[in-house]
Image 1 (cartoon, rainbow, N blue to C red):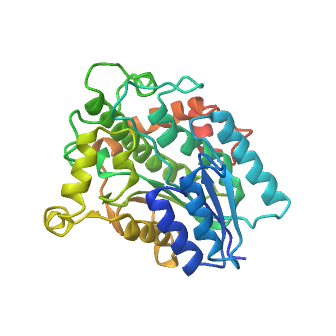
Image 2: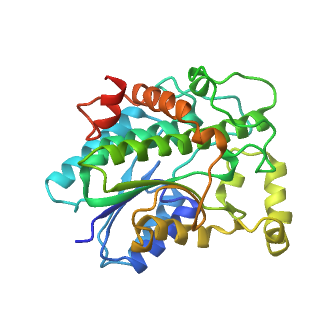
Length: 335
């Protein structure tokens, strides 16, 4: 068996194409797909089921996972660990963190855990899930978490306020409120991607220091800006809907002359699977823009910020030495 691949946000615009490519090109893998709503009334999950049904010979499972809940995240990790122990699934080969959240039309939302919802879904819960499941990999494997060019201040035209990691990290999970809902909403999204990218650099360092896990690698990947993404129509103002319909989609060939990372979700989904699974990327770590190794934002490479964010993420995610296989980070932090 080639191993299991976990993909969060499997019923998203990118997720549909990633699943199709995974099942078609890599049928030897077991696909563990997570969605926020696994009910029969969710139109996007039903579309995912239709994609899965076209590949009846591939072992696939759809799990409900609400990353806005830490208890749900830990419970899912427990379920996967149990399934692996019982050999229901083969050992992990990859974790792909694709699920996301943003809100460009409302004030910051706090989850039941007390954290900003954008930060929790995009970063904290994904980091928690990865740390819980590190001991479930086979001989090596890859962690791929979806980042964005938004994490680099000034790179995305939607930016009104630059993302940054403050000295007081509590501001990441309890952001201030003002009247600019779109600008601040996008800043929260961009900052969550900056935090995720920064954390991936620290994760790679600790994995390399851990003798039992040093065959694992982690990548934060910008898959490009997807002009047909459902994200542009979810929790966004009508002006963005119109931009997608009348500018982004019809003018894509012209826009790509200015920004070659602009594209549709189909090739983005394919590339995510390739970077996560293809042997050509074995041993790669760090930051990727589409299929190429790249530099991430300067702030994400600040080791002092990496260390402080790493330590606080353990607290936010309720990670202890007893519930993760990674011990190197705890040893350095004296925990």
